[in-house]
Image (cartoon, rainbow, N blue to C red; front, top):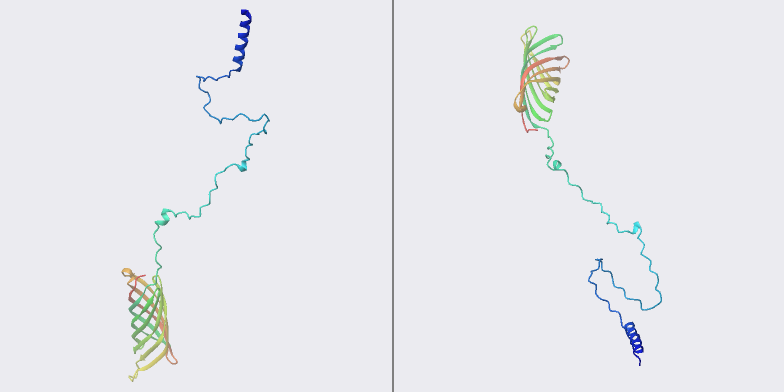
Length: 249
């Protein structure tokens, strides 16, 4: 066989062999530029085209995941430090309760009909008190004379409440009395008993002792005594001292 024909046949056989040999991918020395490794997709096994996959739409704003709403706290806020450190409420103030004793010396002027009588008087009163209200059992004794020089004796006993308004005290008295008047003839004195003696009095504390335990006072009293038909009436002015014993307010 001529040499030229053999060369042609050899060339054709080598081309067929090259065409039939599979291509082998050689590893590349250059690393991939992407650092994200995605999933490896297998090649489709069928020639039929699959359904078109559309990209997932963005969810509406209402469907987006929002942080859970915070629940309103029902806890009562703590009181300020000043409130907790506040001093406790002051105890309720109570009325002072106790016993009062007072005595006084003074002078009086009275009228029996149109006959004036004047002299000295001494009084003593004792009783309980509560707060500003004082209740006394009062006893007084008077001795004087008439304008003509006749001797006069008198006495009173009764119930005498009074109310304290600071240094001022106002009160009244109700009780009985006794009157003895000498006669010009020298016979037995004229004596009368009264079951209705009334008085109004007011006093002012001029000097108060420590812790309101007592006070010196000036007292003015207007008295009227009913002795059968005649009425003996007139004022009395005295200076006295009052002592109070009792619980502190």
